[in-house]
Image (cartoon, rainbow, N blue to C red):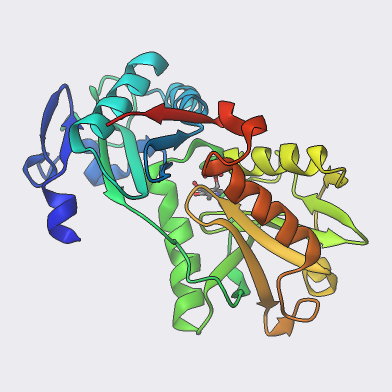
Length: 306
Ligand SMILES: Cc1ncc(COP(=O)(O)O)c(C=O)c1O
């Protein structure tokens, strides 16, 4: 697997090279100060084609986030093209994950975002399951608060901000949990270390709104669409911590984790500890959509013949 990743052709600042030859100097600004922002995109192999999920949406988000962080990304269409070229060049016959990143490639001293040149990279790697989640995830509420929007906006997917995620996830793992759920600085439920969260109460799907210091997840939005199309009511509103313990169902969503049901929170079992009915419906619908089995969601996919 490591060899497979190292030898894939990757894009760095205008050139294509094997990934293990893509190097930057140790005094690169992004390495020193976490001045980058990135995306994670999935490609699903359906036995014949590689289908890239929400390609355009990911690059639109990256472009907007880079702009917010005073970085210049290539245009959305250029990034789309680089992603498609990466798939064509490597011709994977399995599910993949694409990691594009805009970053400060300059080498200046001092944590600034202006007058430092920007770079862009993209590489791919195999990815099947992010979590071994068949039995459900045992999660905890993190003792770490989510970074606030006016400190380091989680919605930007800034590389430096992922230290906040890493602290929470590591604490959870050290304590024997699979994942952490952040509260924000108002003490309300926010998101996982790399996932958005949904709970179900009285048949209604509930998720924190976009001002709750979350990343505005692309999968989160897809879940709204799937719920709407199936007549499942959903609402975006603040979620109190103890609503987690009372929820009938809880699941995490994201490009990496897809749809992963939560078995317990802080050792309180959710429902009967199995995947709930609404989670099961949405999970199935999501899988059908991403593997191209449902015509209604084909427009979510960019098919690459390779
Ligand atoms: C902090 C965080 N929240 C939520 C998500 C889910 O976002 P998306 O569905 O766009 O992958 C991610 C994954 O990228 C994330 O890192």
